[in-house]
Image (cartoon, rainbow, N blue to C red; front, side, top):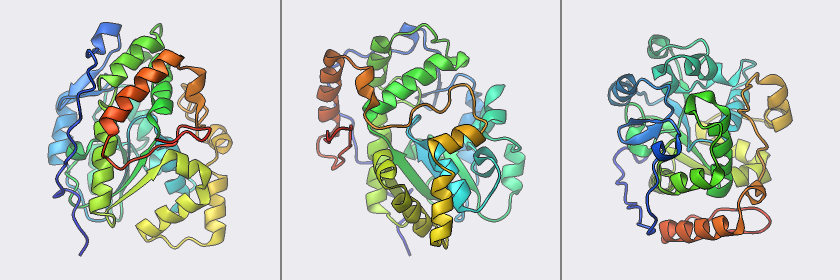
Length: 309
């Protein structure tokens, strides 16, 4: 029998990098706290917390779990095509927690689903989540989890544009300098990138049969290889034709043409574009914090143009 995700200790204690903490509120960035983690302000906090505590997970469930803006939509699309579906990715791999939100999120992120239809669904269920290990709905003992992590410089730039483009955050006039300070303080949407990524990586090392850890950069460099890894992890029989079709229908161009996403949800999806936004001083500060918080974790990220650390 394979190891259980939920019984693995979360050993990572995030080091103090000596920064003065910056709150989202201080820069007019609207978020709510769910079990201490900053989240999209459209969430009903009580409903979200009840889902985490009471969701009945199954051994056959599969979660795609990422920090926000780390290749989530792309991975949902890959999984949708691997399953041979012609439906929209949100219909096949809905964002489970979005069903705890008001207004926009349920229709945008889980079309056709409700908590009741999720509970009644038969067979394997596939979900998107941005949960930290401790907040995976229903706990991490039963499901399989595919984790995708992206280098944090590209992540924070993408998240900055996400916050500016989505009206619910009220951050349309915000600056990157302010946003970067909030992100490095662990107070942007989804909380600390470091805690999220390192804890899931530790789980993947302890229980590789239950948690597959991929990086966005490796997926970009060898998409067919990443698709084969996902298929093998999930026990999906994928011949060369299915792999080729999945890759072809999961390109940025194909997704922009067919996914009907809108609201700037898909951007460039490239490696190293952070250089177009960061100043030298911002990059130096980020590198200092990153090296302190990632020391001893065993994780190395590709920041583009041959820069890896």
